Image 1: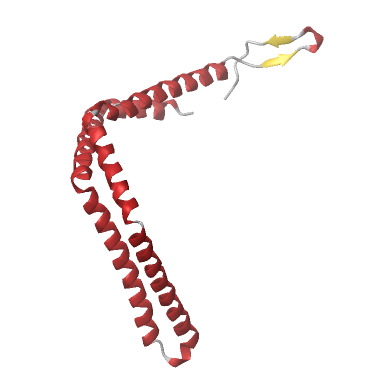
Image 2 (image 1 turned 180 degrees about the vertical axis):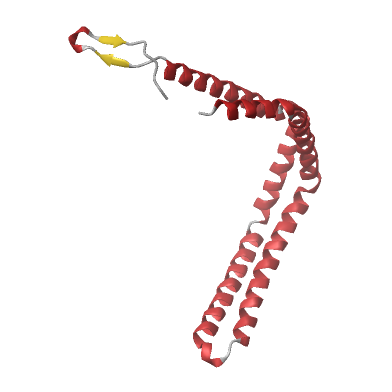
Amino acid sequence: MNTKNGFQYIVDIYKSWGVIVISFFSAIILSFFYLFLVYIFSACILIVFILALFAGLIALAVYCFQKAATVDNNGDHQKELLNIAGGITCGFIFCLLCLICCQRKTIRISLAIIDAAVVFIKDTKRVLIVPVLYHFIGFIKNIAFWAAIACLATCGTVSTNGDSGLDYSTQMKQF
């Protein structure tokens, strides 16, 4: 391992600590803003997503049918495949429309659950700090792990010495 590059990495982190701290607090502020938007616009977000899904599928079906109409007679196989793809897309649109119409009550319940979860997270802001705590615990665990690996790598070799048991030699390994 080239120690110069490792130390340069640490120096770069030290030099840019301000940007790291600003990014950390910006992420927390933006997460509160996101929760606020979800709290206000949760139903709107779902409706826009469903409409965008339908618009995309309808556009795909129209494209398949229009492309099939422009294919010349020499490409009968391609025309047939495009008509089949358009038909399958229309069938999928119909099934999705039936599914959404039949599951209106479930969609309303899920929106109420999302609203309740957002209110809970908005009222208990300390929940946003919990992942940060676990991040630092994991970071400390990784540092301890790699420190233990470094210690084991410099201990030398362990070998058996016949019937007398283990012989711990103090010779350093050459990397």
